[in-house]
Amino acid sequence: MNTHCLKFALRTTIPVFLGYISCGTAFGLITINAGFPWWLSPAMGILIFAGAGQFVAIPLFAANASIPVILVTELLLNIRHIVYGLPLINQYKKCCRFKPYLIYALTDETFSILTTTNIPPDIPAEEYYFYVSILNQFYWVTGSLIGAIAGTMIPFDMTGVDFALTSLFAVLSIDQIQKFFRERKSLNQEDKEAEHACN
Image (tube, rainbow, N blue to C red; front, side, top):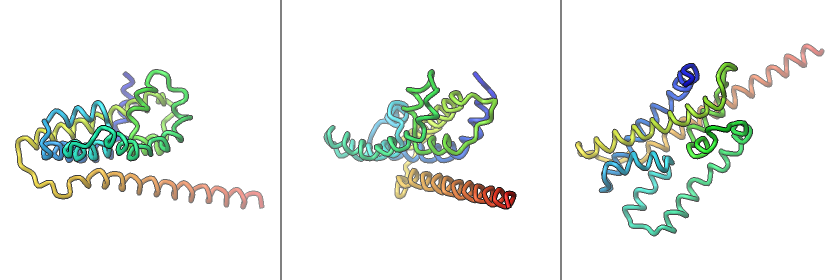
């Protein structure tokens, strides 16, 4: 285990930790509120690990939706991951040990971190991708377990809880947009300096 790499991954995933613990807790509460057993929430986080897909699956399960309806709904909801995967093709190309898991564990938030973090030269990229992915899944499963256990012990008013994941996605999107404009401003400044030096 590369502890230096793990520590760096822990630092860069702090925003996701905060979001996934709260969103996972919300998912656990929703699962219990829908009448399902507590273990379903963390089990879905381990076997499926698709936050928005999991939130949508619970009401579909509760309504006894048919398998084709569930499959089509989940496909349409998660098809965006194809778009997410395209920018990561070159990053994942040299990954050998963890590539299947990296593909499986790709979420909106993991994509955001992997495409915005500058990895120091002394940290192996593949290990960093793995640690970010598994830490994010761990945060989600932990939050789901907390919510499920809390939901079995304490009655909750669930109004607005299902909006938690949307809020997290909005925050990370704003971060991506700000980074884009910062980099663009920096590039424009470098171009102006280079042009001034030529003159």
